Image (cartoon, rainbow, N blue to C red; front, side, top):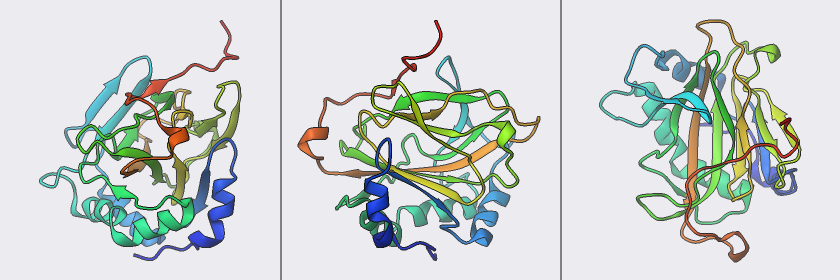
Length: 233
């Protein structure tokens, strides 16, 4: 696997990003490698997706089931948990001792159909099995020819939930990496406006450490959904 960005050169940009440490990288992976993943990506009707349908999220999730997931997708997920990726992420974020999630809890492959959404939230902070602290997210988008009017932008909000500070189009071979804290609010809250049969596809990876800085510590919690404070009544 070849990674096409220098993490050391990008660390300052990552750590100083607004509204919380993050970076958007286009072309981090070989296009050909991601097209193999995309070609093997399961369609909504093809497999036993976990279906989420509530006021906070409407999406499909599919985890790392070795017996059923396509080999091309499985190989990519395994590489994202490997040594080279961990070295890259540690150099980029400045977070030492990152640990991948072999269970892909909450992660793996995600797909959102037209009309779907994921409301603004901060992620759960402790791995339910490993009891490790969640520190970084990596989202890899697989959407060739994605159009701005279809929506699906990843939104990053400030800690007070008064302003969306970044809107990121989920374009093919675009990777978003960000630090995970109790105030790293993100999501795509507006229903997808893509044509029928065109879905928003991504691979989500989460990384952990054994402990975290004192100023970031809090009691274990599940996903925290928040409404914007300036939303109309």
